[in-house]
Length: 171
Image (cartoon, rainbow, N blue to C red; front, side):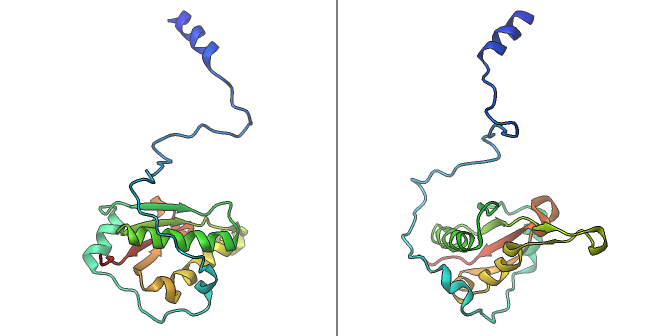
């Protein structure tokens, strides 16, 4: 067994950077883009802040309970870590549009918790994306496709992520 271990060590290549971690396939699933219809939308991300909808978001109690308990699976995830506000706005718009067209319902958008404040401020995070994402989701252009959204439960990202439940698209 020791001989096998020595042979194995010879075949392993070290990571290039100190903090680089190997990508595990089960955490970072790459969607097969050939199966997903990607409509070619013009960039209307500037419209996300122009006019907000006064619509009240509501969802059936049973559906909400299933979402909170994790019985409805998340159909798509978007992680906005590392993107600036304009890039994030465009990514959110395209992500919602593509998933709506492909009849995906429950989405998770990860913004992160933002900059950490001190203990006296309650360790709350403040972040541009965290504050603006709800405003973008309430915009006229997206509110027509969204049935409900709220912060994710703790096990899905808590205050640093938002669950979005889309309407059924009519095909």
